[in-house]
Picture 1 (cartoon, rainbow, N blue to C red):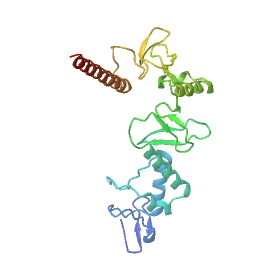
Picture 2: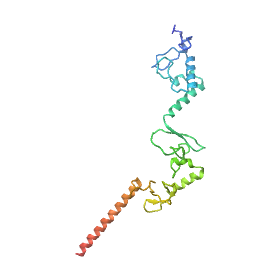
Picture 3: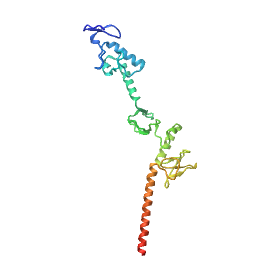
Picture 4: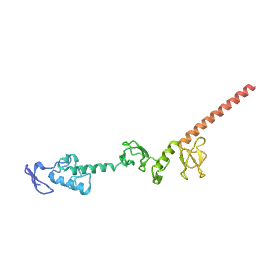
Length: 241
């Protein structure tokens, strides 16, 4: 590299260039021997041909990354916008994402929390959707069954089942309504299952949260009734004496 204070030789085009056209990267990069035109062309090739978002200094074995904002003034608008798009795409790939399934919305929804999201509300149109399978929310249907949907009537049936708290049989998938009584119900196909959680009966009690809570309440009431009966018997025995 030849320098005389007013010019230098660019290591890419090997041409003498005015010092005013010297590209200056960030403070951590020691390479200062590239002209603005060559750097602009270098960035354009990396974006247009390789769709790269993280573009490193062209210096051999240099790991410093070029700052898009520092390079903005030397790039054509279309190249800078393409670079921004590539950066956004790379950022989005880090997150679980889904598009709103409603045709009049289609907003991009990111799962920035990293948790296992199923039912969620679109922040744009405020309607519910299933984040797991990317369709409108389907109460009463499992995600692996949503491919059976054929039209609006299927989703209306889902809403009806949700409003009336029907539970789908784990064997035949028919909706079963529980008006009162024990949580264990028998479907018309003969399958006995817990109406609270939808699992087949495997024992006398179901240990799902809803059933356990109700069973504990029932046990507490039964224990209280037995205590009251014992007390009445004891008081009756005293009066008899």
